Image 1 (cartoon, rainbow, N blue to C red):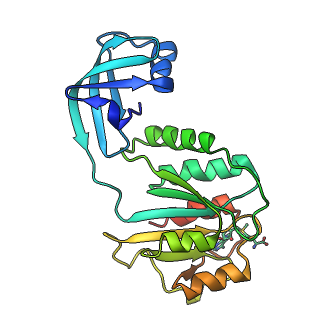
Image 2: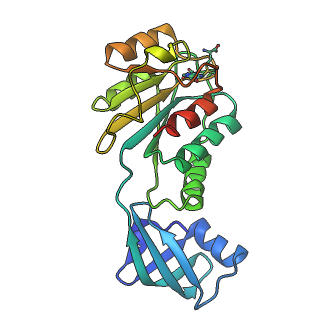
Image 3: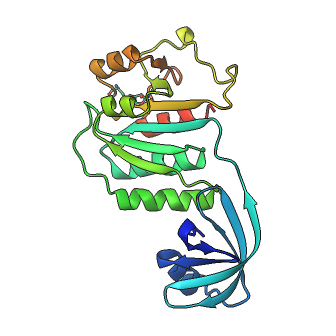
Length: 229
Ligand code: SAM
């Protein structure tokens, strides 16, 4: 389960809202059952259910396990793609592959579309639980690649670009020492990055990265990019 950090107090934690309803109605948890919950901030609790209400499950903490924040820090920034299921697929896989943060941005070639952030947040939470991660990646919506580059100016910026020749690429995750580093991984939407965006990123020190000789769909590129780390 996901437990909001503010609902952990002393020797107890409390599941609320959707998590509590799922525990009661679907899993039919009862007093004495053992459950696991992460606060999304690096801690996982083992607990014994003490009481259940309509919208609440209170558990007594029997064990606490902590994990440090993901290292290196990987921020995946994706140009918003039109097809919702493809965007949501990329978000889910990014969590499974260890992204620390997910940024969705309107790029020059994004076809204007509304992103259902409530759905995206739910997907991130489910993927965190499914993949047994203890850290809940944040999600952020930005208006342009310019804003993304400004927001993450202290990061090593890698831009996936299908037009770059794989042989002339210097960045190599096998060789570089990655621990302690922060990376911003940029992936374009269906229509790719505009020349303006590529030039802007390069002027700000981004390295263009090839993900192989074939042109990948944006969501495949996101997965392939993260899987290199
Ligand atoms: N610009 C292309 C077009 O519309 O004809 C395709 C864009 S591709 C579907 C979407 C994004 O995936 C690209 O902007 C890039 O970030 C990434 N991508 C796809 N294939 C790639 C490759 N072989 N190497 C690096 N990046 C790739």
